[in-house]
Image 1 (tube, rainbow, N blue to C red):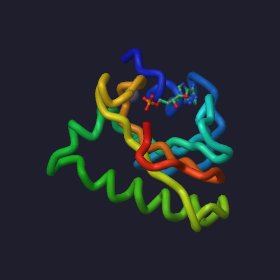
Image 2: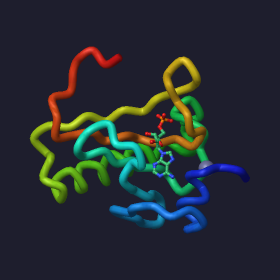
Image 3: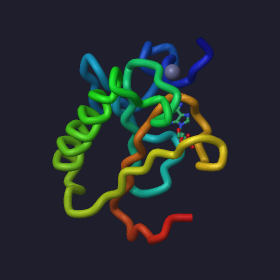
Image 4: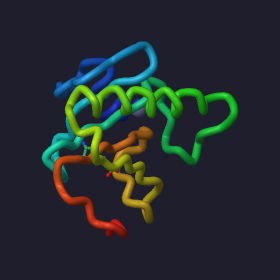
Length: 112
Ligand code: AMP
Ligand code: ZN
């Protein structure tokens, strides 16, 4: 499958890995939009949160558990944002579900 994030998980494309377990992989974004900007992705190829259902939703809970752990380790627990872009109109450019975690700058609301 021609998926850049599946290739990162497989080690075929290098990444700046932060964390990995049997279900998920976390790595720094190659084009950071904040001083701290990392991505958490499921190892299973799920296209976006639009594909979440009763069979695969447990991985989303696990991703949020991993984020809670990583923001403590990276010392940004006092303020961060989790973003998942969905579909073309939602700004999604990689069709493998991912959760952006952004921190260490003032994050405007509403987002653009
Ligand atoms: P999105 O636009 O929400 O689909 O987010 C995709 C994100 O993946 C963007 O923030 C990109 O900078 C990031 N990205 C694309 N290729 C890589 C890569 N090889 N390593 C790390 N991050 C990447
Ligand atoms: Zn994939």
